[in-house]
Image (cartoon, rainbow, N blue to C red; front, side):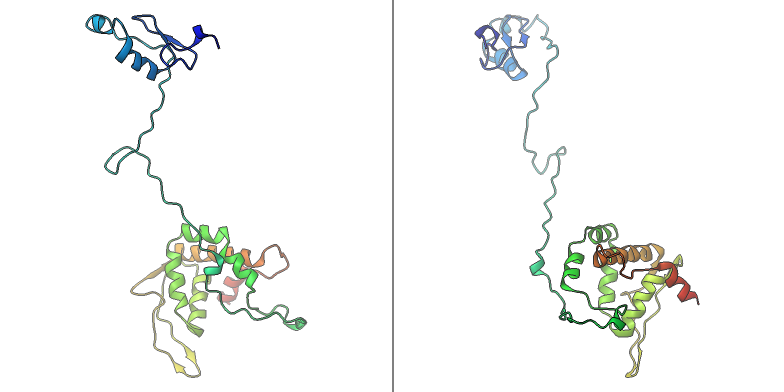
Length: 232
């Protein structure tokens, strides 16, 4: 690049503008400010009479600054979320698969495999459902404290109820060992809303998708059949 084309302030970039007072050429706003503050020969003499120079087609350079905690303007950057490693999770007991499965038990409920547990733990659909419906964590925690018939009854209500609003009555066990003390599904007074049912069904479908994977012939959820069986 020719010397005559360089900025007379920084001598690095090609000049784009000309000082209206002393005709010095410069390339940017920072160079203009430096020139006016230090080397403009007529700046002091003409400051009282000459109008401020107008920069045509000048694009100011964005200045980066660090905003303090008390500044009202500034972008708040959220802390990154780190996922727990799979090795840190408490995996349930997974029995060994038999080498010769019984064909008569092909459609019977089976325990989940370790691979299926991993698919559930890494499912994006399950994570989205939990983030979309904060009440799911509370419902899952409450269901997890139940055992036996109480748990089955709670899951049946969460998956099959379709009324606009249903109040959870206390659950009681009717096992052969006697009637267990009645207890509500949720702590305190709580009415199960339609939104809660929809959220739990959405989570159930996400879990089913993770467990089934690419196997299209595996039996899945059929909400219409479940509702018909309940009505009959």
